[in-house]
Length: 86
Image (cartoon, rainbow, N blue to C red; front, side, top):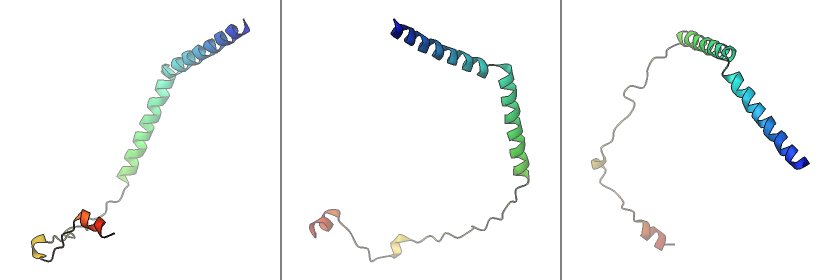
């Protein structure tokens, strides 16, 4: 008998927890505070992004392309031959 009451009490506590959690997150008060905080964060991000300094691009023409056909001394490596030497 006590075991059944214990299980029933656990179930009731779980259902109460879910009920109040859902009630809180679907309430108008929570939605208002959530959207106000999101709006506040958006405003902070906009203000911060407007005050950022832009740096000049200094990466033009830094990559030098090499033509592979010019290099005639190529070694051909074969995987199995490398293992056989051991």
